[in-house]
Amino acid sequence: MIDLSLIEQYGDRFLDGTLITLKLVLIASILGLLIALPLALARSSRHRRYWMPAYAYIYFFRGTPLLIQLFIIYYGLGQFPAITESFLWPVLSNAEYCGLIGLTLNTAAYTAEILRGGIRAVPRGEVEAAKAYGMSWWMAQHRIVLPRAIRIAWPAYGNEVVLLLKGSALVSTIAVWDLMGEARSVFSRTYALEVFVYAAVVYFLLTFTLTRVFSQIEKRINRYLVSY
Amino acid sequence: MVMLENLSYGDAGFGDELLIGTLLTLELAVVSLVVGILLGLLTAAAKLSNNRFYRLLAQGYTELVRGIPEMLVVLVVFFGASALLQTVAGWFNYDAYIEVNAFVAGVFALGLVFGAFSSEVFRGAFLAVPKGQMEAAVACGMTSWQAFYRIRLPQMWRFAIPGLGNLWMVLLKDTSLISIIALDELLRWSKVAAETTKQPFTFYIAAAIIYLLLTILSDMARVRLENRANRGVMAHD
Image (cartoon, rainbow over all chains, first blue to last red):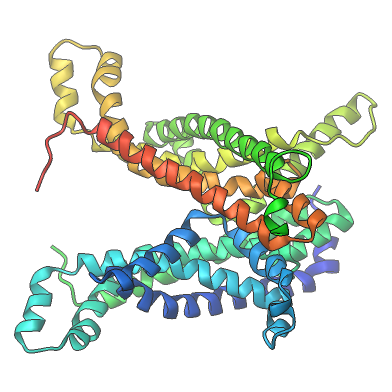
């Protein structure tokens, strides 16, 4: 039943696909985090002109399927001559860039909510202590609130990166040759179900490793905390 | 506005097709929810059982589904089921390509995913009911089944709703994956409309807005259910 010649024949393509998947996830998670930080601060603001746009952004990206978001970016934007004739078109007509943009914008919304939860969970006393020391709002944010918030939010953030990795498989629908894309293409040629089993094994190993890495870092960043 | 004309209801536009697609999306989500809840309860029971084999089986199923993309689950179920049927048909000398019904495969795949995640919610809810209450119930003369049915189950619901609510949102959005195996749900119709009218942006945004409305409605329903389930509990802080 298990046909090892498939690996011999298509092994390189699986490897290439896995590298694309890893590249997309790595870049999207970094860029997503960079967008999520100001987004979370804006969302936590008391001023309507800050929290409203942040809230709308987060609600849209969390309330609609990632698959549709990718379709809007890759297929949808081409509807407008203003875009197809602009300098942005070389980027927006490239499937891989569109996949990256979609994954980044999507994970930024989820990450912002996670960070906001972390910011809210920072004990009030610590924020007040920072104020009492005469720290400005900015200084208190970057010295006290954010470092604490990131540690509190870390496990949830780890989950989000795993979800991002799993969600990245959707870019195969807009013709990106990631692991899923390669698997689907090999399957359509061979009709061998093992192809999907191999892909599943690789995804499983990647998520498993990612989970481990995150829990190791969690232990490390929280090592100053005494456990009772 | 030519753009909006294409969204109109009837022969001129795709409004009615989007509506039909939305109804199928909802149908798919609700049937998958029922299958997923049953599977989740069963898996949670296996995880809490004294039988080592059941526990391992349930644990393995949960870890596996958590670790692979939902899209892969959908494809494996769809193509796996048709390969299986074909093999069985081959034993009876029947050689033809058999395609599994996309709705059934979709329900099965989404149910599998929901079951894996909800089993953790149910397990947590089961353990969240204080032990003393169950002991009190038995002390009152209830059988263990009565204690489960009267005391534990109604309270489990309360602890499970927030988690199940989140999973429902995930499930609702995951129904769009079933368009990949060509079920005529909302996204599939949007795609057809986008290709026919050459207005992909209009129709994918329309689909996104419909999903957004479904999310908002689900959010409202969840708040109501949570309030209802907590009506016997005093508010803290």
